[in-house]
Each structure stands twice: as structure tokens, then as C-alpha cells.
Amino acid sequence: MATKFKRAIIRNPGEEIYNAISTRGLSPDFRKAKQQHNQYRKVLENLDLKVHVLEALKEFPDSVFVEDPALVINDICIILRPGVASRFGESKALENDLKSIFSDIYRIKNGKIEGGDILRIGFHFIVGLSERTNKEGAKNLGEILTPLGFTLEISKTPEGVLHFKSECSLITNETILATEKLIETGFFENKYRLLKVPKGEELGANCLSINGHVLIPKGFNKIAELLSKEHKIIVVDVSEMEKADAGLSCMSLRS
Image (cartoon, rainbow, N blue to C red; front, side, top):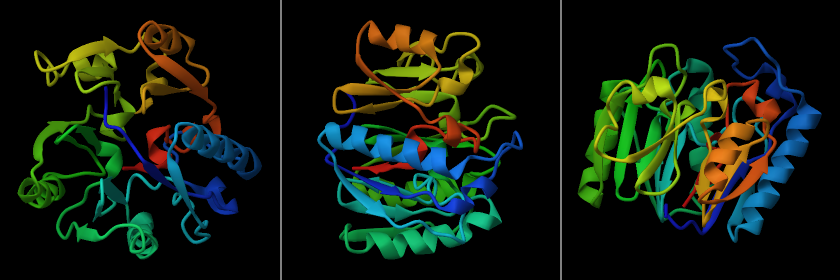
């Protein structure tokens, strides 16, 4: 199975979420987003995670997506460098919030890198280069992780895709759910057992494996059918977050 998690950090959405970045020009509805976020929190709590809830940041519409400005591993926190200027302040705000939770905090000082491009597989990390993550940022992350006993390799996010994990999810440490577009790059070949995202449901590729269950976004019935053959699934409605190019993993930091 994938990593056993004990806690999660989430941040409440602010009313300004309607201004969150969207490549499709869509605006999340605050009331619905808040309801979905509350349900997401309850799911995490029901999976035996201690959930730390951070206050909304009015000045940062995308701040509900806490996975992008930080990476957490056990008691370690690494503050990342977002790849878009409007999110720079999120990293500093998040660092201040996490000081009371994590004993060791590191910082990416060069390049740009977002959590949506980082796939963790046990003690190994894959970083997908994208418009939000460059080689310099990935290299800097490797310089932090290697002395801590982790390994890192660099892949490439397919062109036109926001984040690496928009196209894949870790289901177990041996199994990855991935879109045909990502599989065709050949990066995962002979390394992992691959489950192909059913055609037409590529937007549902960002699932989340937590403590013996797989969270699946609502509305992707073929993915649910595929994963339910071997796993306990929980369907979660994140349709408002999807308007801002986000998914299940984006809304929490898990350790």
C-alpha cells in the first residue's frame, strides 16, 4: 500500500476563490466550494487523520490548494517556490502557519517548483517539469532530499498539462493510475504497474490514496469502477475545485 498518513493540513477557502487561476476561465462558487471542502475534511478525519485547519487567506484566491507551496514528509516540511507570481506570498504565509507543526523546515531557494508536480512513492520522488516547475527547482529539491535519505528523478509533464499529478495518481507503491498521454511518454515503463485512466475521464486522474482507501473525484464512474475492483474507494465531490484546475491531492498536505 501507499504511505500511512497520520495528519493532514488544509486551508479554508476564502470568498475570493472565484478569482482562482483557471485555464478554462471558470470561477468556483464560494458557497459550494466551502461545502465541498468541509466534506473533504470529514473524509480525512474518518480515515484517522488529525486534520489541522488553517484560516483562509483573503489576499490569495488559490491558497486553499496548500499542496503547491509546500511538501511535507513525516516531521519535515519543505517550503516550495510557486511557478506563478500571484502565489508567491502563499509560501511565506504557509511557512508561518506550519512552524508550530513541523520541527524541521527547509526552503527551496532557486528555480520554481510546485507540489502538484511532485509524486511521492515511499522514499522516492518524481518531479515532472512543467510551466510551474523547472529543472533548477527540481534540482534544489533533490539537494534537500538526498541528505535526508530520499531519492529523486525528473520526468516531464506532457505539454498543455498544468501539473504532473493532473495526469496520474499513486494508488500503491507499485501501482500508478495514469492517463494515456502520460503513459505514452514511456517514463513509467517497466518501473510500475500501470492502470490506464479510461478514455474520456482524464480530468479525474488526480485521485488520492490514504490509509487503505482511494479517494476518487465525483463524476468519473469508469475510474471508480476500475479502482473498486481492488481497492476501497470513497467518492468525493470536488467539482468547484476542478474549475480552478485542482483536484483531490491539491487541497491537503499529508504526513
